[in-house]
Image 1 (cartoon, rainbow, N blue to C red):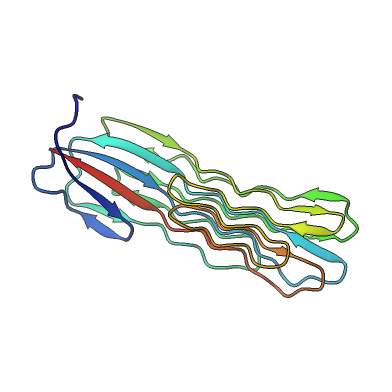
Image 2 (cartoon, rainbow, N blue to C red):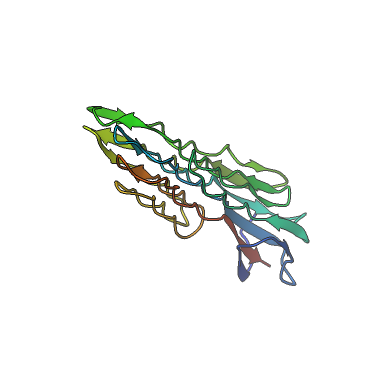
Length: 217
């Protein structure tokens, strides 16, 4: 493919819709991110246990050039998972028709450890699967960033941060309750960090995916 023509417009797609190119568009460059996973949540703790849940992973990412087959494409933005007092829900898959399909990030695992534990780390929030492309002239795909581990040090809990995407930040961690919600697009939610003798707390929410379409004559 030769150099693109004149830039006509840049469209940001953040909700389910049908993509209609600007009149005169001959080539498009599409960038996308899947929806981030939620941080792990926790049931209520007793006086002998704490929880240090991991953050959710960010959505996977992709970008590609297309010269045909892009008019009237149905765009789906993956849903944010429901809040849970257990393992965080994965983010939904975002798709630019069949041309670009981007999985969301995995949710953060939940953990519970005794207050006497000297050190323990939970498993990380698993990134989503590698995106798939079709009909592209060229393109690249990447998995998202995993959510950070939750940790327990001598009975003190610290949850994990959410994974960060190129378009959004992961949610913050916590030692005393709910993890932070992600910001922007495609970030993972922070895990819950619940001290002993505390109420049930859910993890932070991930943020939804998006597509950016650069239109060229």
